Structure formats: C-alpha cells, structure tokens
Image 1: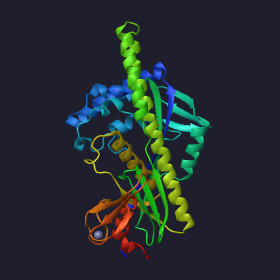
Image 2: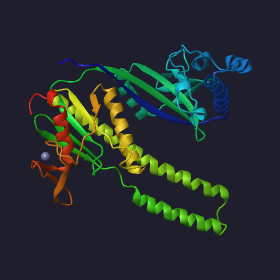
Image 3: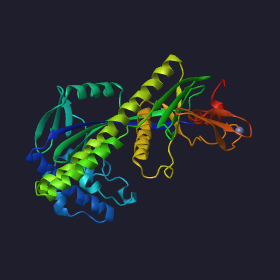
Image 4: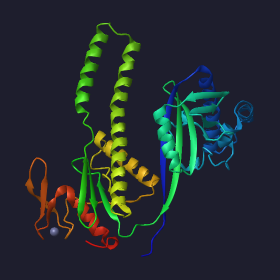
Length: 373
Ligand SMILES: [Zn+2]
C-alpha cells in the first residue's frame, strides 16, 4: 500500500500564575504599546516610527525584541499577519515570547522559573506542575518557549511545548471510532476484529448551577435596588460566575481527553497494534451555538492535539448515525428504551444500536486497511 506521510503537531501548555508586581506590570504595559505599534505598521504596510524602534532597542532586551522586529526570528510574532482576518483582541494580548534558554528571556533552574524582564526575577513552580513538566519534557518536544502576559491583574506564564511527528497510515490497525456527535455526548468504540470496548462520556450538566446562579443574580439585584450594594460590589458577581462555570467544563474536557488517549495507548500496546482514530465531529449547524456544541468541539480539538503529540494517526470523517451503512437507506427506530435506541433498515433489515452505527460506517470506509472483518 502506498502510504502518505503526514506531520502531526501537538502542543502542551503549562500555565502558571503569579501576583503581578508594579514593575513587571509597567514593563508588560510598555512592551504592549510598543509591540502594538509594530503590529499595526506591519498590518498597514507602513514603516514603524523610528522613535518607537529606538525605545524598543533601548529599553527591551534583544530576546524579547527580536520576535517583534526580525522577520527571520524563528519566533517572529507577526508572520503572515497581513493575511489573517481582522483581529479583535489579539492586540491587547501580545505576549512576550521567547525560547526557554539560560541566555534568553526565560529558563528553569533548581525547580524555579527565572524570568528576565525589566530585571531577573525568580518564581517558584508548584511541585505538581514541575513533575508534569518533567514528564512532558521526557516525551522530547521539538520546541519549547514561554509566553509571558498579564491577565486580570495577574502575571501569567505559559510554558509551551511543541512536538512534530511524521506518521503514515497504520496498516492492520486497532480501529478507534470517536463519535463526538452522539446523543449521549461522546462515544468511543475500540475495534480489533470485533468490538472490544466502548467508552461513553457525558459532558457535565451545568444547568442546575445555572438556575442557582440566576436566582443569586436576582437576589443581588434586589439588594442593589434596596441600596445595600455599591456599584463596585455588584460588578464582581458576573466575573465570579463566568469563571466558576467555564472552569468546570475545561477540567472535564482535559480529564476526559486524557482518559481516552490513555485507553487508546494501553489497548494498542496490549494488542500489539498501531491505532487509527476516526473522529466524527458535530456539524456546526446541527447544534447551533449551544454550550454543548462548544464543549464537544473543544473536546475534539483537544483530542486531536493530544493524539498529534503522541504521533497517533487520526482522521476526521463524517460518520452517519441515521443512515444504513449497508445500503445507505434512512434508518428508522425499531425499539427504544431509556438507555438504548435500536435502529433498523426497512430495505435490507440491517439492525443495530444507534450508538454503534458510526462504527459500522467507519468499518465500511476503512475496510481496505483492516485485515480481518
Ligand atoms: Zn440497509
């Protein structure tokens, strides 16, 4: 079989947060203004102001400066910026970017993060984060760099690890079908000559929390109208609520993706096979702009990223769950219980659980790669 090579790129980001002191804050703010100028000049194809360039040269060290001015720098920030869509927030978030290296802007020494901003500063790294970082570094990333930015009055440091894997389509693989469009949430099937395992994941239901927070907001408004809350106090609420709600989705996605990838690697090892992952992603129109869709899409994005990191071959493919994989006829519900929905084809009498139909579609599509059926 002629195999086409493909480069999979995966990222791991470790985010650390520290209190922001006024010197660092000033440094970041100044940098941002200067960087914004360079950014807009680049966008509008005009030459940057010489005074700005002079200020940059004078007050910003070369390892934070080169990626603004030197187009040949491997971490040049504004590559192809003319061709990207109009930004809305990017301009306010321009990070300080550089590789982790002793002679550069950031590095790790004795379990501490050393940043050279306005001057050299040391920040402790929590033990757990350090262990995680060591583990990821052992997986030999191709590139590592640090982003330093200010967010919500905190100093945010992101250690970014980047890995490139050149892979070909596995022959006679362990077939893994991830149906991210299923009614249940996410269904993952493992197939090696037969169905060997199915994992089902349901995104957390935050609607209860929503009802609760809605009531809280109502009470807050009542207090405000009675004059018991100041304008300042009232503005804290939405921020807190938004944070609380979004974080739990994020945590769920991270843990679920880790679980699925762990299972894939373990089963592949046990069966002595390379896995082939077929991912069915929800159509943008079918779920509209719901929270569930956002969660499912971000699960898919994260899954592809982690698979790429490990060099596990994945393909995106539209798999159907309401059409017959044998003859293409529309399926109808044969039997429905609380937990299962058996579908049947009126033409060829194919019958299966609705959750398994995408798996049959994948088996049909990738038949040529599978040795046995
Ligand atoms: Zn049929």
